[in-house]
Image 1 (cartoon, rainbow, N blue to C red):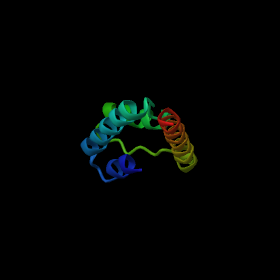
Image 2: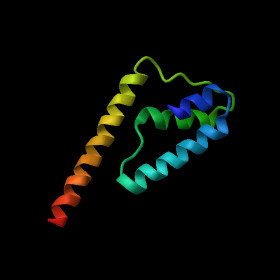
Image 3: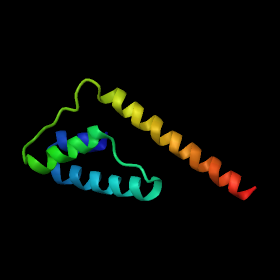
Image 4: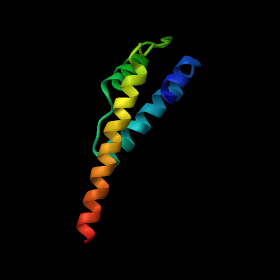
Length: 86
């Protein structure tokens, strides 16, 4: 994920900025909150200047789970929009 790439390249400010933007769009557009793993990463970035945070061995499966949830929300939203226009 981009936030992890920014962090690992030492660009903490870009990682924080990306998270804030992502969080705002996710909440504003889908009324969904970021996953715990991303919130934890953000909190670490905010409290530790030199942190290089490892998201752990479940990072890929966590991302896959997040993507599936977002796709499910998109699908439900589209179905709702289609039903409301019929």
